[in-house]
Amino acid sequence: MTVPFSTFAGFRAMLAAQPGPDAAAMAAAEGRQAQLTKPPGSLGRLESLAIWYAGWRADPRPAIAAPQVIVFAGNHGVTAQGVSAFPAAVTAQMVGNFRAGGAAINQLARCFGARMDVVALDLDRPTDDFTQGPAMTEGDCVAALVAGWQAVDPGCDLLVVGEMGIGNTTSAAAIAHALFGGSAVDWVGRGTGVDDAGLARKAAAVTAGLAGNTAAVSDPMVALAALGGREIAAMAGAIAAARQHRIPVILDGFICCAAAAVLAQAQPGALAHCVAGHLSAEAPHARLLAALGQEPLLSLGLRLGEGSGAALAIGVLQAALACHSGMATFAEAGVAAG
Image (cartoon, rainbow, N blue to C red):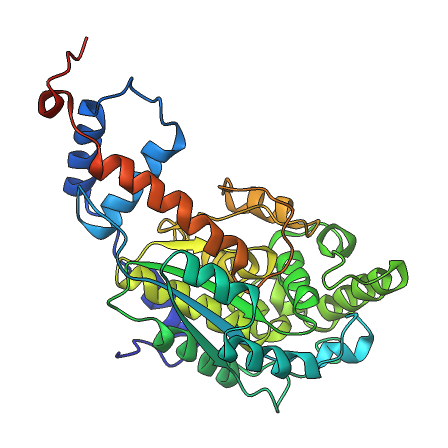
């Protein structure tokens, strides 16, 4: 797949020129909803989800046939600050588990008929510790954006992106802090299960990261490079690629939403093809969803990452489309419309 950018400037230009939903398909889907054998609005949010999906797929009576889950993995230099309960070696070990089919995300992808891909990004070359300077150069960040873009199958009809990277909740917290302000403690959570001392180290790392990378506050792409990780940049690239192909996206938890937030801040409306799959138990996720204007489909206390909450929400969207596309209209069923 041709990649239409090679610099941050090119990426910004691409975001500004991306397509929108098909208005005719949305109108036809709305018309169909009005004729289905049920009281208007009785299926609640399932109805608007179906219309949203129909618009992006340009099909007023769609079904999900080829969902894709991609898990991106990267390592973070900020782990030197003691921000995680697990060592960085776990990232590569979990990549092996994903590839062997043994992780939670493998089971959820299989449950909902999704193809699953795993993309490991230079695990032997962690990003630099962002408390000491930028985590990535523009070139490294663009390379990760490209990797994410290229991982998306243009033939899929729904995308979930997940991640694995010890230290990446700290990175996501720093990005969110740069993009939306507040204080470091507003954006840090317990991640892999750090204790109070670990939580304090995370907040200190985020504070130091912004103090040493001041340009991140005024430019979301600089924030991604200076404070992010390769897997976070790859998720942003994949979400942007999905928009280019009019593939709807279900967003996962805090880390995925931090990647998506970079796009939203770089280009208003960049997440119109996305829906939040769930509200995670990571404390700042609710704050981030509110900043993005996203209402989660599920709230089950999940905090695993990997794309697990978003993968679980595939079932909600499948149900919405099954009702929308499979139900009879009043005329078809011979039922009086009232």
